[in-house]
Amino acid sequence: MTRIERLKPRLRYAKRLPLLSPRLWRRRVVTWLGALLVAVVALAFARAADAAQDGFALLLAGRPLLILVLAPAGLALSVWLTRRVFPGAQGSGIPQTIAALHMTDAKAIDTILSLRVAAGKVLLTLLGLLCGASIGREGPTVQVGAALMHALGGVLRLPRHDLRRSMTLAGGAAGIAAAFNTPLAGIVFAIEELSHSFEARTSGTVLTAVILAGIATLAAAGNYTYFGVSTAEMNLGAGWLAVALCALAGGLAGGVFSAALVSAANGLPGLAGRFPMRHPIMFAALCGLALALLGLVSAGTTYGTGYAQARGLVEGKATLPALFPIFKLLATVVSYLSGIPGGIFAPSLAIGAGIGQWLSGLIPSAPSGAVVLLGMVAYFSGVVQAPITATVIVMEMTDNQRMTIPLLATSMLAFGVSRLVCRRPLYGALARRFLSAVSHRAT
Image (tube, rainbow, N blue to C red; front, side):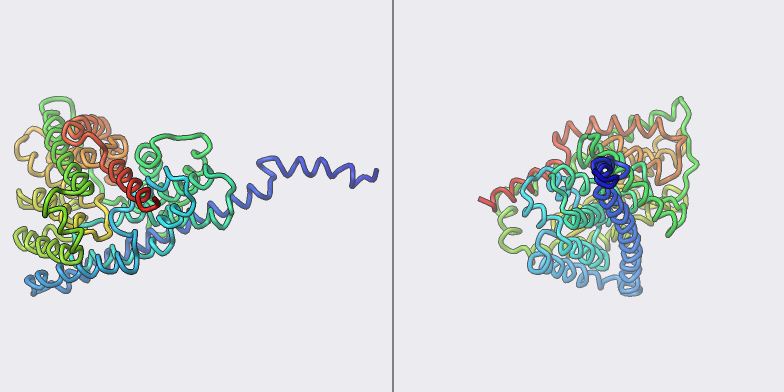
């Protein structure tokens, strides 16, 4: 036996080692490139969303009544394009991603996480923002990130479902991390909301994807904080009354919001349920008209993501009407029910900030900036019923670790209040509804 023949078994063994396996290194490199691609797409999406909102402001400059035509026409067009050109692109994108993570039918997963749907998600979300819809881009970014990583998993021809699932989960987590520039929130979101667990086989892929997405975001956009920097803090004492009040108000409002969306998704009784099904384009136009009227009544504060309003309240540079959170909540419900693509993350944080501003007037012993943060985390936790994710997102987005304990306490209490109103988490309930619809179509 020659020397080379004696070495062949050792070489075959070496190739099976994790650090030397060409197959595993190919998978790692593709995953890393995918995470960087998700970050680049998320940043481009963010800048395009800002441009769409700037374009909306230019269209309405000096012509506030134009919204009475722009919103109905824009939402009707968006729903028409969603149904005819990009079927499956409607809604937030997070329920679809959760549903895909729990599916085993490869063809059905390919349909939900197709690049065509991802492209439609981006384009139609931008169209909604250009028309004044109260939607966010963060939820759609999760589905886009999941779709990109799912496509790369197809390139790798991953042999097992759990490996493909880990790629999808990593893409969704990288999407939320890049959208908010909050790496820790991306990891927690993947654990608490997307997968509801943290499997050892999945953890390394998710962590790596989030870290690389965070590095790419840092390199391209700098070390920015989404809602600016908050220096607010809250010591033990009378000010902690704000924790209880914000948790009660935010949890209740968030639970009502979630319950309304879940009920609508399950189908309303009578004409209210039949009309949207039979005349979706006309229904979207009517939603656009309602959106326009809400905008006019609120002096234009309900249009778009709500980012500017929330940041102004966090930094103490803005004062909004007392009824802003109610108008913004209604505008977000109307935008979601219309059937257009778009998320609820940013609008929810804006609503919560408005609730905090309103409650700060009732609690003079608590710093107003701190109460705004408590309102944000309370309402957001009430909506998504993911208290740890809500806490980490608000903490990271405002660069305020001093408020960690009050934020966590408020978030947990708001979660409990929300469960009294809406017994099932919003995204989980919508995902189950989506899975049921897919199963019904398949049979």
